[in-house]
Length: 249
Ligand code: MF3
Ligand code: CO
Ligand code: CO
Image (tube, rainbow, N blue to C red; front, side):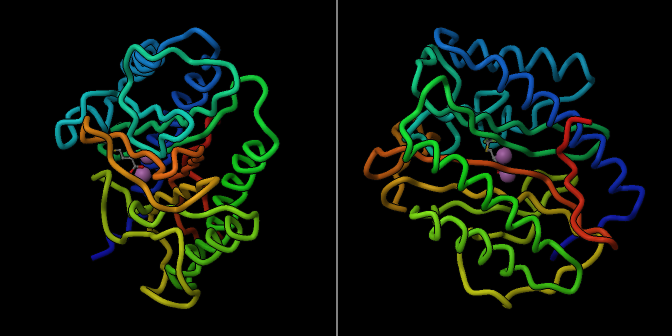
């Protein structure tokens, strides 16, 4: 069952989205050669506490971090640790906060200095795929219009979408109905209504779409160990079109 939020609830989700976005952007700016992912996570924790927010990830099914930080062939759910950022990597920062009773969930992928042209294209295409999906988050449309637009953009760029992990509804809980695959035909699934709130999150791979989960039980890796990019926004379906809730200001 898809939970439709009231205008007041959407206003509160905008506040949680703003907090998540501020943390995302602040941590993304700290991604520089030599810093460890644990240091990045600690900064996220400090910023969340400073804004009166909690991590939506910490303790979720036993997850041990405040954020997920996924490098190169790591697709999502990388656990912060002793690993140091290196020049040439791409780094996904996924931030989820609980603030005022609502979750904001958002991710970005940053390049560390110079990347190969195909990797630059992967990151840019994944961000464009998120935009194409958001553009289909309109009342009267169908859920799979979002999925289809993402897939078209990613495949059109010469890349493969991850099929084992999906976007999702978001609200008082991080993961609500519906699931939002990043692939599929247009025109299927539930009709979109004003007040639905969705975490749209393309995960796009340079090589094959298949993924493995590492022995830590969390880190998702591309099967061919080629790079993967991930972008995510929490979006409300508004009367006048999509409203991105995870913007920093
Ligand atoms: N933020 C992820 C998502 O976009 C979920 C993280 S799982 C957790 O859905 F365990 F790290 F919390
Ligand atoms: Co997320
Ligand atoms: Co999400």
